[in-house]
Length: 62
Image 1 (spheres, rainbow, N blue to C red):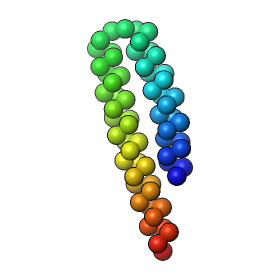
Image 2 (image 1 turned 135 degrees about the vertical axis):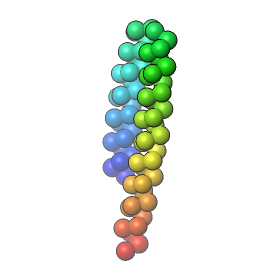
Image 3 (image 1 turned 180 degrees about the horizontal axis):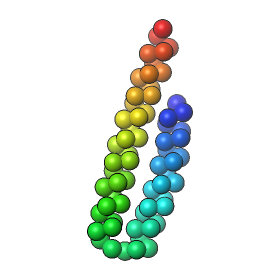
């Protein structure tokens, strides 16, 4: 559960910063890079949360 809370909070702060930065810079190549990094961050967040939940369920079954 800690993975979920900290992941969402840190992801929101990160996305707010980089999207604002991309908007202020306004260059398409930088916007593409920001979009790709944001997608990679979200995929990693989902994988980490799934791994954390499966680990929690395994420890509850013991």
